[in-house]
Structure formats: structure tokens, C-alpha cells
Length: 293
Image (cartoon, rainbow, N blue to C red):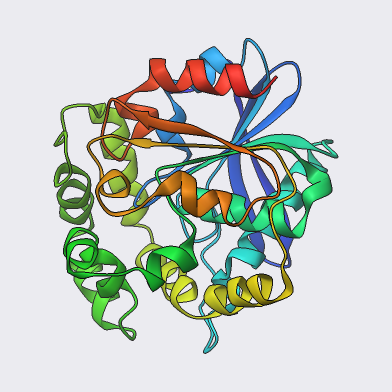
């Protein structure tokens, strides 16, 4: 689904490798995916972006064909700090000291942490359909908890959520993705089949759950430490979300991101739901190429 790209697997720690694809020419642009997906979310955008950038799209640890290490009691193996370091290591191995960065959903949370911990690596940052993790948890109400029920299901102790997902991974993908604004209509059957294949891999359900458990625990500790120390994003930031999604209904996205950024923040709602790269690829392409200059 990525004509002209080559695949890679780069070891970021002993016995832990990150899978991805790279193609194009020009400034480096790293694309990070969300739940319950893989780098394939970018299949409609990556070939077009490759005309302007050297595009790198990876599978986060625990997802896709990347390694799926066991979790630990503190969920450090899936902290956004650890997942961000994976991506810095990948980009360094590919020869990029700095790069443009765009993350959707879970990938946006990794991108946020990457830009905080490694500001010298990030030329510009774009996050898609999220508010900061700490702000979302602290503002949780009935409307948000009902819409994002999976946040609270996936953080339950092992093996409850893992066993349910492993019993029907294909069904989990279609119910999660098809249960939002646009249903399954915007998604390529090939993309859906790839998400289903990857979630059925050994360890994938556990990696997915550990990602969310980390966000509820160690990630919040890191975020609160940043807030207490007055650490803010130092890089130019753009934020886009779907006008038919939960972020639009439940949060002041621009306000929340301005509260954690030293720069002005630009962005707004695009005419779609949660999955911007697959529901509104043309609109997102225009915003990406306009901002990443």
C-alpha cells in the first residue's frame, strides 16, 4: 500500500525493534499512528507527501509488526517517554538529526512526549484529534467516559481486556473503528484487513492495553512533573481534529494545547470524525504541507 517505499526493522533496545516504511526525498517527516491501527493509516497520504518530504511511518512498540515487549508493574515499557525514545532512535539510525513530526491519536501522545523530551529533534509538531492526556483525564465526565469507554476498559488489570480482545481481534477492530461518526465507509478493506492481522499477532492485545495503562499511570506522573516544573512545548505546534468527533464535543482543544505550549498554536476542526488521515486525507494534506514548511 506504499508504492516506492521500502520497509525496515530497526533495533532500538536489545530484542526490541521498530517496524516502518520510508520513501520520498526532502526534509524528514515522521508519521505516527493511533489505536487500534498501524502505520497503514497513512496509506492515502504518504505517497503524496513523499513528493515533498522523506516520509517515515512506523508502528509504535506494541502495535503492527514492531516488537511487543512484556509490560511491567509500573508500565514503564509502554510509557510515552519510552515510546518516544524508540522513534528518536529510529530517526537517528535513518540519518535524521531533526525532523517534522505528525501523530494521530496514540501517536499524537507519543509525539507530544517526544517534542517535550527532545525539542532539538523536532522542527515542527502536528497532533491530530487529541487534547493533552493529563487535561483529558482531569476533565473526564459522563459524556467523555461514555464516548471513550475503551480508555477505561483497556486499563483494567491483565488479563481481562487482553482475553476479550484476543478472543475476537477482527471484531474489536471493526467495532472500535466502525462505531464512530462515519462507520467503516471511509476505510479501505485492505487497510482494515491489515489492522486485523496485526491485532491478532501474539502480544498485540497486551501491548495495546499496556499503552493505555501507561497513560493512566506513569505518563500522568511525567505530565504532572512537567506541569509542576513549568515545562512547556518549545516547538511550533498545529492541532487538528474532527468536527464530528469527541474532541470537538468535549474539549477546548486549542485552549488546552495553548496551556502547555510556549508558541502560538494553530489549527481547528476538519470536516470528518476521529480518523483524519483516512476520512479527510485531502484536507489534512493541505494543512500538513502548509504547516511543515
